[in-house]
View 1 (cartoon, helix red, strand yellow):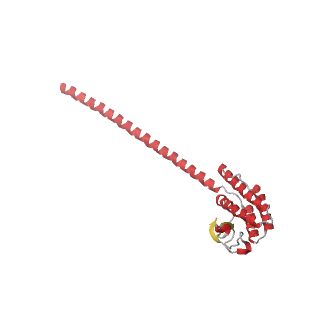
View 2: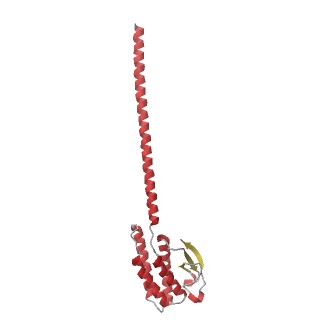
View 3: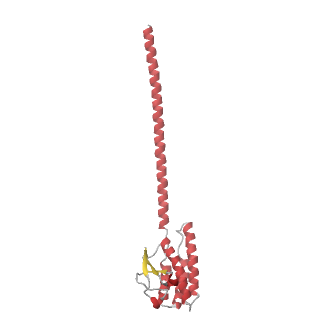
Amino acid sequence: MKTVLFSLLAVGTFALTSCKENKEQKSTTETSMKHDMSTMSDSAAMGNMATDKEITVTEAKKSSADLTELYSHYTHLTFALSGDDDKEAVSAAKGILASFPKIDKNGFSDEQKKEFADLESSISEHAEHIADNAGNIDHQREHLDLMSVDFYDLLKDFGTPKPVYKVFCPMYNDKKGAFWLSDSREVKNPYYGKEMLSCGEVQEEIK
């Protein structure tokens, strides 16, 4: 009889222990599954964030401006000065001033609008000096030098309607040098005109 009781107790104890172990094992498995699902969810969310960020950067790069008319007046200005024609330089400078209000900036971000406004203000100031100085071609050339730096930044950041070449003249400004932008690799120096028309070399192509 005692043997039977001990056997029953042993079976009951074994059953309870097995049940407890099964519950603990099930609980551990469920916790592990929840952790894995949470990790997968977090990874997916981070992936979406990365994708969103990439899309934002791509869209920002696509925001450009149609600078065709504006740039055409700039090249008109360089041609005028390379031909020592101060009056034609006045006409080109006025064309630059008239072109800015026509440029559509609706696709720009706030940061781009600020950058464009700063460049527009600086270029316009130099264009006004050139337009107001017929008969003083040296002064016009000084402002072309400064204006070209702004035009370079404008085309690099907002796009160029065609391939543009950055041409450097090492002699201008007491041999400190200066550059201008051109549609062609052919050098026609606007800083010296006929005096040294072919002085300069292409440093960079902007596309």
